[in-house]
Image (tube, rainbow over all chains, first blue to last red; front, side):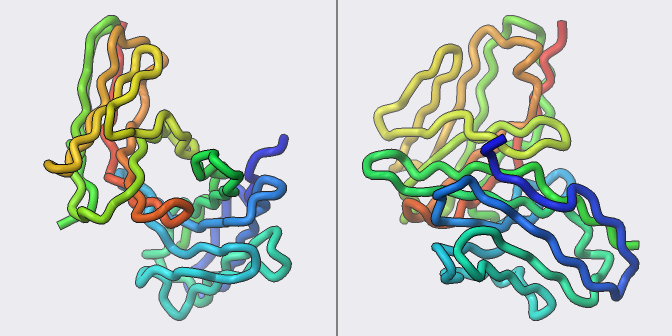
Length: 116
Length: 110
């Protein structure tokens, strides 16, 4: 499968614990995005990278959230001291501009986080 | 006010019906427009991009009115497999973040 992959698919944790999610983008895609989706809402943008550089962060991304893409390939999203309000689906997407092609974002299956 | 607004539905229609979804966006600087489809507990997938001249893909027609900041999606001859949530999406620049509406749920019944 050459699509975007995310790991783990599900995570249950207790309030106050730290969690880390991984995203592997489509090979050769230089942009990688993180979104969060809660029930009944559309995805909300968190942050995105072009290669290793983190180009934009949402106000939603509090100090407890940190994202990295150290080698410009996979990315990790860490949440420290989780709160019940962090429970959501965390979606990763990637895109890669090639000449005239429209820059479509392809989404991974998501990591569903439940904070007890 | 949300940047992208949609009627949340649900829309319950019989097979074969024509259904239209509407969406408005608040930022006139928006450059790119899309409809994504999301099946229950799955990731969003691009259904179609939306162009100023309007575009069609089989049973699906998308329209954009920049002056009114309004986007629409028309589905003709609905199939059971069209049941999903349809997300209206805008972007301020190519390659930048996507801004999603809350989605409109469609249920097509036999």
